[in-house]
Amino acid sequence: MKIICIGRNYRDHAAELGNDAPEEPIIFLKPTTACLYPGQPIKLKPFLGDIHHEVELVVMVDSYAKDVPERMALGLVASFTLGLDLTARTLQNELKAKGLPWEKSKAFDGSAVLGEVELPMTASTDLQRLSIELKKNGALVQQGRTSDMLFTVAQQIAYVSRFITLEPGDLFFTGTPAGVGPIAEGDVLEGFLNGQRVLNVTVAKG
Ligand code: MG
Image 1 (cartoon, rainbow, N blue to C red):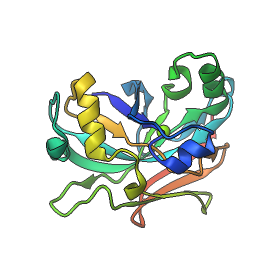
Image 2: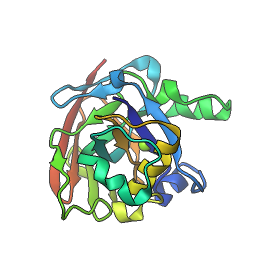
Image 3: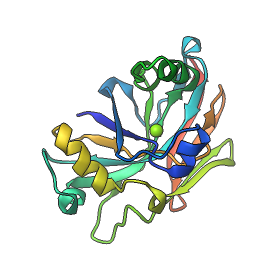
Image 4: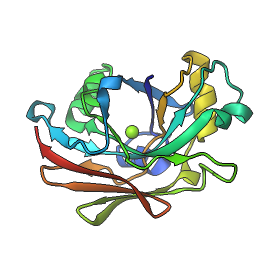
């Protein structure tokens, strides 16, 4: 199992960090040790600096696959939820400025927060017609629609599977809409998919 993340997949989020919209999907990975499971609090580590929330649609694939055609890609998706792609933003900016890989700022322990409600893929599920919201302490901080993705979930799966063999249980973090920002001790973060709360996590001291 691995965690595959897609960067800058919404135009408004790419723009808020001063980046151009990518011409091809931007891929990075998190290790399984990055998973923060439901019920566990986010623990802030002072040495990582400021940590930003990035709420994202997360899909799970349930079979091995390589070179998947786009038209067949959604057949691999078993379920979906929301997650937080936690990012050590200042550190990431330093690494980007030096042309270095992002892993220290993206792959640290607990950086892949998973929602507690896993929704099954059904014949009527349309992953590109979902609304995503993140509330911090009850206030709306991120809002987006998956119809605004630059690369659809099917395109992401097909593209990634050209480079990396997919395995059962792999998770795709499919990119965040605009509104990313810092979290602090005591914060409560709630993620909503089409109005249904599927993610609920608190921020504790490290
Ligand atoms: Mg992200």
